[in-house]
Image 1 (tube, one colour):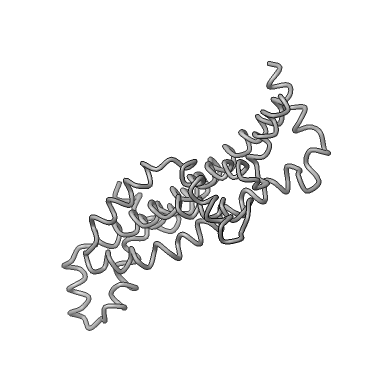
Image 2 (spheres, one colour):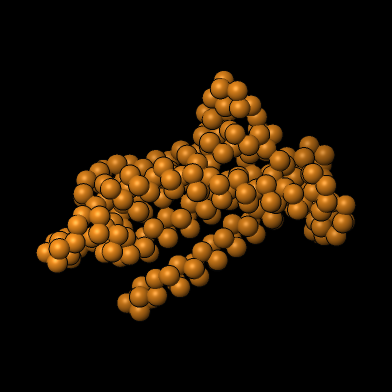
Length: 226
């Protein structure tokens, strides 16, 4: 009960919301670096996955990417990114956090996109070619629309994972919601610790809910056949 009271008191204090280390700025930082990480990972993973899926090659790579994403602890990725960031002059804070989050986001994006494109019936693609469509036109007009549910699932999984993991950036001096958790432990301030944990969870759950609704709107035919 005391911890809950500390949480309510912390959230009810306006000064905790303002300033460079306030809730508003740190929430924005947390959300911004997560979105940027998924965008960068998408630029890296999606073109390769789409091309390999279209050619029906690289299935082993897709499976390996999915398994690798589940096997490597997020903290280990951050630990690997930190010395590289320092070595190349990017220092602490956003740079190593972003690198770690991009690496974390790539496997679900790659695996789901590849699976979606590769799972399109070859007979449909052959029929499209028979209608005179080029390889690019068949990919753009047939394979990508049909694989949209898989692609959206990859984006949703990646963003939720990244939002939930971005709190670890506080360990390398990134000022996000994880900073409240680290500071709370150091200061024996349950209200601050719980605020960081609660808001991180709220962002992840909200992203899951919003992207699930977006996915249903963009791919309504999936629900019709379930």
